[in-house]
Length: 195
Image (cartoon, rainbow, N blue to C red; front, side, top):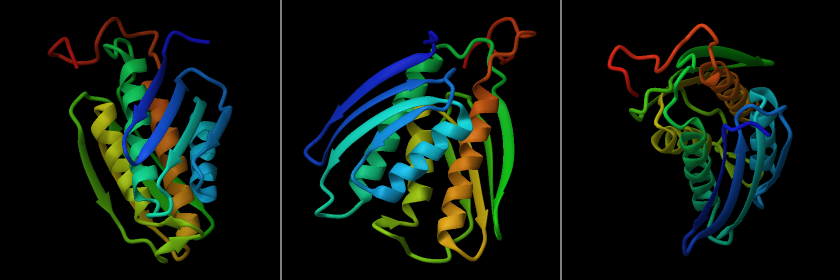
């Protein structure tokens, strides 16, 4: 296991979450949130970002999927922030576009420590199983706010399953690129000397 790891717990009246992240992993994942499609997306995120990820969430799914998806994103974002530490030596910027059949998703990130989030596009269907499509947008926003990312996401397509899956894969590939250590870089990738 690398040194860029973190284990984060989050307990609220709505969810109970345990999350372990290894940024320099091999893409292995064990995910159990109670939402099948969301488990699939988190597993795809780990696989395509080469992150090792363990997530368990006991959430108030009798209400809806909102608290579970949001709180997993908050916890995962916090784990990224902790695992990255002072961000010394990282590439910092990256962008990717990923297709899935007719759908295309794009992600542009600055691992800046300054959280901002922008989204362009609409999902073609409101639901994917028990997962509300717009929660993919909210996942990105919550992750960005707690990982300290400036993140721009965009989608286009005709099938929400494809749009959301392409989005999670684009986000994973972009974060993999941006969080990679650049052996040519000495210190923080900023003229300010800190992120």
